[in-house]
Image (cartoon, rainbow, N blue to C red; front, side, top):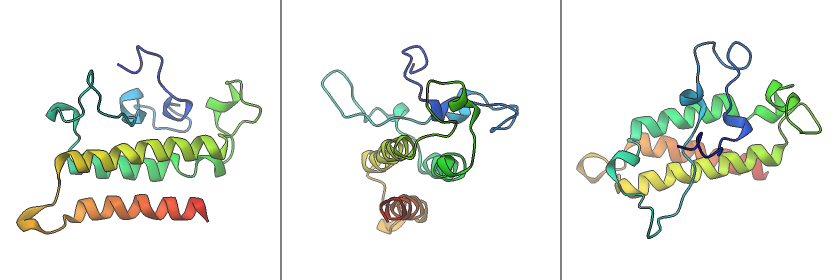
Length: 140
């Protein structure tokens, strides 16, 4: 849907054989954006809420492929765009990660995800720790 609406950010565009593995497509790199619930858009539809295992995979993807993108040298996606430099601006990376991790947290909230026997689930704790660690480091 976002592709049809032209709502794909440069950090989500694939670079098969360059930055990303050759078999990757937009389905591998596009991450669910934050949205608020509204009268015309409900977030708590079960098909739209990602399960905890998927949320942990998304955290891993963001850590490995996006969070340090502004420090990893040239990026063809920015060379071909109208950006003044060939690396992503740190503010773009920060805003992208902030928005996507906000939706990860929202998905956990929508599920009221606690885990078995009322204990904190290890998957949820790992995701929140990774997100908090990144925010603490980026603000430092």
